[in-house]
Amino acid sequence: MTLVAGVDTSTQSCKVVIVDAATGATVREGRAPHPEGTTVDPAAWWAAFVAAVDQAGGLADVAAIAVGGQQHGLVALDAEGRVVRDALLWNDTRSEGAAADLVAEVGAAEYAARTGLVPVASFTATKLRWMRDHEPELVPSIAAVALPHDWLTWRLRGYGPAGESPLGPLLEQLVTDRSDASGTGYWSPATNAYDLELFALALGRPAREADPSRASTPASTGLHNSGDPAPVVLPRVLETGESTTIDAETPELRGSRVGVLVGPGAGDNAAAALGLGAGPGDVVISIGTSGTVFAVSPEPVVDDSGAVAGFADAAGAFLPLVATLNAARVLDAVAALLGVDHDGLADLALAAEPGAGGVVLLPYFEGERTPNLPDATATLSGLTLASTTRENLARAAIEGMLCGLADGLDAIARHGLQPRRLLLVGGAARSRAVPAIAAAVLGLPVVVPEPGEYVARGAARQAAELLGVSAEWPLALHAAVEHPAQPHVRAAYAAAFARVAH
Image (cartoon, rainbow, N blue to C red):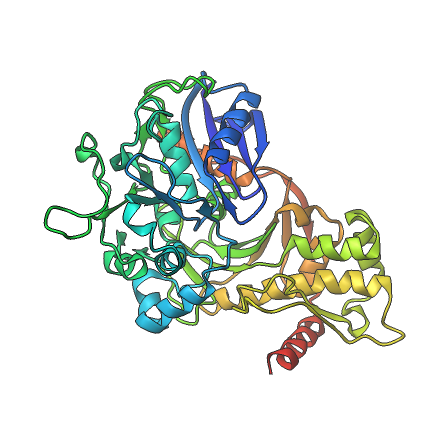
């Protein structure tokens, strides 16, 4: 049996799965938590990875490994490989004003044409601009900028901070993949290249792509002898199917072996698409901390409204995606308000009629990314003495969350993608109520795969393919649901949004 490993370094935790490369069967797995919050010292990711690998039985019998992880986070490193400041995560929205500045300076249409994105606070470029404007004293010390999965891959291979890693801070060994690079705001899925002018506009420093042939030359910061700023090193973007290797054993990482193949990795949604085996006509809706709607496209997508992010995928194609900030935590909040657990919330919601008796929840509890309303709050409307029941509140919470995702589905469909089937994943997909209500709100058949670590499995599939294995692993299904569409639910949601928006 040939084993491969897949890693998901997510917002909440690190998951490691060890998989039979031929069948996709999980042999063993491990998990360790990450700190809460929207900023984190990456050292916590490394500690969680080491713990998760140990819990998974180590890497001694693993032939290849790849890392998937949260997108957009900013990991700024100095010449010694140490972080300049705690990493700013995707859900840190302090850079809202920086995003608006970048759009004003470049133009939404121009930005979308060059990168597939219109900047919002999530993207790395906006966090760089925020640092330039609010922490200018740190900018000269930046020698490299990486994403969370880039940084963990670098550490896995034996590189890292001076004195804390076997091979030290060789920044030229930083690598990334198309999918994660496409979420920075300074890389183009259409040209497969960094847009260095946009990087410089964001940070006020020039940059260049890492070059491993220069790996023996220490990185520099500050100024060249000419007085010009030294370029910031950006991870080399590996091609689909390209690999690197573990270059030194790391004693604390159980079973680490020199020569093991390391894949490019992927952003979390692209890795999930691999793990699910998503194909033409499949739309994936993931309901976790955030909500995402994405589909595989053979062509790049450019949406200058900013609603659809034109990401690359991890297999050489493209992954148009719409994200919402308010997803499973909407259900957490309303369940707590009603004094029930998630099973109780499902019971209440299924006892209500579609449309929740006219009660509508716009679930913008923490602002919103789509639509781009970072300062918005949630709104509950349509309450009468008759409609104010626990059942209607429960159903309105689920319908409101799903209506936001349905708007995302519509936005993707406007770019020519024809959805035939919805793959519903994430923690909220396990609710008895969510899949049934989703089929009615979205008007399409809903398939719920068995609960699983699909980001980590997607990374494992990438690792298997590095070995020449055709990893067409079967997808185990938990449920398949069809319900007649209930257009009045979305009509009520749209009317409630129009009242608030105006």
